[in-house]
Image (spheres, rainbow, N blue to C red):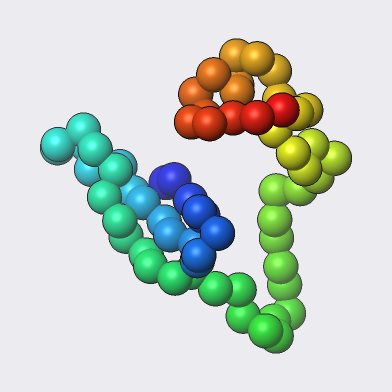
Length: 66
């Protein structure tokens, strides 16, 4: 699964192994306003900008400005 945002919504893509490509599986993903449980991967919470990324990681990002 690949989750992507470009500033206008969140979209989820699932790998279709038969064609070797990610296809959109969910559009406009939203977090419920209320819920009993939430879970997020906050492991990179300190690295809020691309300037904290290694040059190797920045290399795959178009127009990456540290």
